[in-house]
Length: 162
Length: 364
Image (spheres, rainbow over the protein chains, first blue to last red):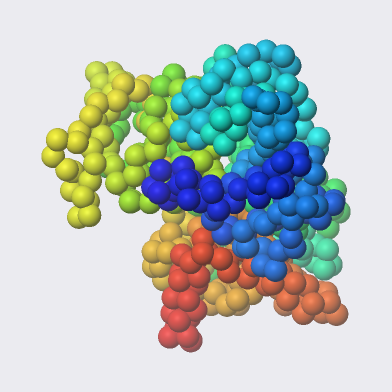
């Protein structure tokens, strides 16, 4: 249970997964935000209406999966580091997973690192495809990883020890 | 003796906003800060803030400190006294301060106490071994002074401070072996918990520290699961080798000045301890003495900033400043506060404020 472990349940994760049709079209945001807290920068960061307007600042964020093009600007703005981009269309056996990153040491593009699951376990060796330093002065950096396709919904970080 | 219209004590998020709000309405303000810099706890908060644009959401606390400090320093209605400690409150409405090693008093027409809070401690065998710190102290060591506290850390308390400081320890390259929480659930915003979990830090809910061990300094701790009566469950004890233990088990409002000033006080657990009774515009039972931020009830810095605005606006209004737009501005601030407190995570503060206002009715 998320409240006990800090790890969302499979049911919670399934409920926020974009539709199969949308995933087949390319990169899209996945927002792993399951607690109503007063927070709305994901909505204000997006300039294409990718997030539905908040009626109450405590609302859970909801994406408009047709308007979201997976640009990843929200990834660096989310104070909870809870937005990820998944692109299932990258290749036959690899998907792209984009994560926020707040450690000073940035991995080199093209390097191999450990991809970590939500519990911090080493899930697979992954390739760092792209590293974007924070778009705004003090947001999170944004890193795109090439991961085995069957790990696209498991890998949510990389090791900070390499 | 110094003279001022509005005296603000404390240069944290609440005090900075209170000073700015009162000065912008036209009042002449003096801001007293114990540290040699403004910002209070914001200066060590390297994480992005929640909230909305009005409360600088998505900015890091340390940058909010810079933004607000600059605005305060550049405002010619505000006199800033850094390295200055408020010592006491006299019957003739003067506040005693120690400024640059000298004793002074400040005569004022309105006072805004934004004195913040102090960390709670936890008692267990050998809890006084060197290496056992308050989590806030470790955050100050790391993020203000650039000193790492040790190599292997355990954190007691999975509230926002415990979880955030754990993450900052990881960012500083230090091992965090466990976060231990006595409650059955994580108190921190769950997105904070998830981000430390995916860096490999376990969170043990329903667990406590049984004892600390070490000869001259901390070498290990023993933790154990606890039952619903908070008693250790036999056979669940285990030893963790750590050289640092951080204790993050809540905060208590720093209310000494308010007691001295004769404000009616009440003990309200949901707000962190003794707090001054106050109305919705932050005015205590002593006319023209206001509170804002953690001293009025432990809450997030975003709420502290808005409370500071409310106190600053109202103090200025009481002195005859900004009467034209007071109602509009204070209503906007209340709307922000309501938004921050309306959700499920605002339950505790709402319960505390309900009690506070009920006590207030009795007191009147």
